[in-house]
Image 1 (cartoon, rainbow, N blue to C red):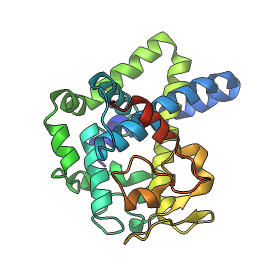
Image 2: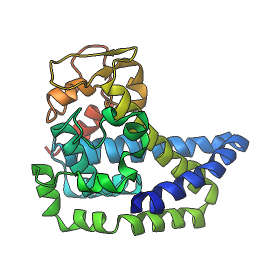
Image 3: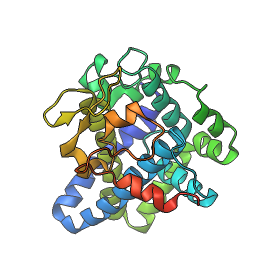
Length: 254
């Protein structure tokens, strides 16, 4: 296992246990879970790390860019440079053994453990255009370099302010987001499950998944995304939902 497993994944997983208990005895705290999940998941990782930094689907103002980078960082899924580079590798080597998140290595690898292994750190691609932009940006590289300490300090600050909000709001939201990306995007959207369909001919197994629209805010339009990864609009049919697209349009640089 790599340093991320011991320094982020394991502590967050252990803290999820009391978080679930607190949510059970005080369900009103789940409103904080929803708030943190929206900020860290669809906004921080979905719009920030994925659409902006991984694919450069749109341009935005510098303060907004830095806010998105910070939100994606405290989502605790991985440093921004690692996130972007591993996602680029996923697109370049989809469905092959060079794809870091490939379902071909099994359910648990794709859905949960791929970024916990030392091997995955050696498989990422740093030569892509988005990664080149990141490595030229000192502020984004600072977030990458100090990923662990930023997450420690943020969690510690939240605990000092209100430990219940820290656990049920923040920690539980990061766990939900890790499962959302791993289980839904990495695994299910590359498998012919019930409700999945394709809208574009691609050389990979990517699929759209309609019953995940509410939970993915646009991520579930995966086949369209693999066909045209730089397109900001993932929606191709009237019934599809791409909430992230509208949020991107709101913050897009005019």
